[in-house]
Amino acid sequence: MDATRIVLVTGSAGNVGSTVFAGLKPHFALRAFDRVPTLGANDAHVGDLADRAAVERAVAGVHTIIHFGGCPRMEAEFIRDLLKPNIEGLWHMLDVARLAGVKRFIFASSCNVAFGATELAQLRTDTVHAFNPYGATKAFGETIGRWFFDTYGMEFLAVRIGYFRGIYVDPDLREDWLRRIWLGPRDCVKFFRLAIEAPRFGYGIVYACSRCPENYLDLTSARTLLGYEPEEDVPPAPPVQGTS
Ligand SMILES: NC(=O)c1ccc[n+]([C@@H]2O[C@H](COP(=O)([O-])OP(=O)(O)OC[C@H]3O[C@@H](n4cnc5c(N)ncnc54)[C@H](O)[C@@H]3O)[C@@H](O)[C@H]2O)c1
Image 1 (spheres, helix red, strand yellow):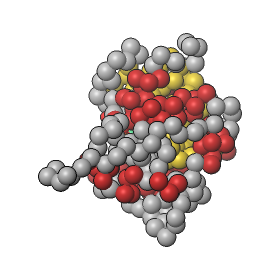
Image 2 (image 1 turned 45 degrees about the horizontal axis):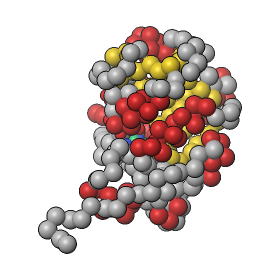
Image 3 (image 1 turned 30 degrees about the vertical axis):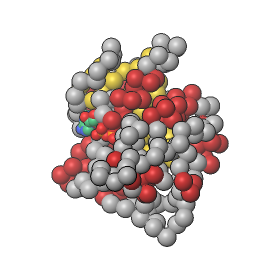
């Protein structure tokens, strides 16, 4: 472990963030940032993404950021739920990061950037068709990240995460559309470890999912940029109660 290369994980107390934080902890010098405390974090900051001073304290001395913090809900309302964390908070993270000399910014994007393209059999990384305002905030993140890379040279990776719950027995996996984008816990940790360690790629957009039916999410760029190969298969859907 290189203790001088601090990796900041925002949203570290959340669903994806806590799994990735625990999985990466043996391998990197990690720092946590969330508005609620992060279990198991020695170097932890509690603060709000929209509080610039709190973001500055969290980002100081950091080499790489994995940005999970924000509102993850597909049905979220723009002004009430999304504007502060997903737009203003993201701006603070990016702007503070480039001022602090952060080398790589890994952004938790979403398939909701592209789900609007219902006519496509496969979503590609150049598919941009927001399914909802939440997806539009992620499209903004991908675009403003490109501008930060072009302008300041800070590497930016948009990870369009599939469906992650961190569990293997999940009644929601009866839904075919979730089975097509499932990301397992082990593949998830592996994915973000590769994103930290990959040789310089500049700017990129990748999908993150496990071995899913129909190859609905195009993993070509994840393979090319990160060397990612999924190892987990979507678990069987649990039977509906009362059926054999
Ligand atoms: N879980 C998925 O299936 C999925 C899929 C695609 C993308 N994503 C993205 O991954 C990220 C994490 O998703 P999740 O499912 O873990 O969500 P989550 O709600 O479990 O975690 C988000 C974390 O961010 C923190 N947070 C929210 N607003 C904040 C603020 N203003 N200041 C500081 N911290 C704040 C929350 O406290 C929480 O711990 C999100 O950006 C989400 O959009 C998740």
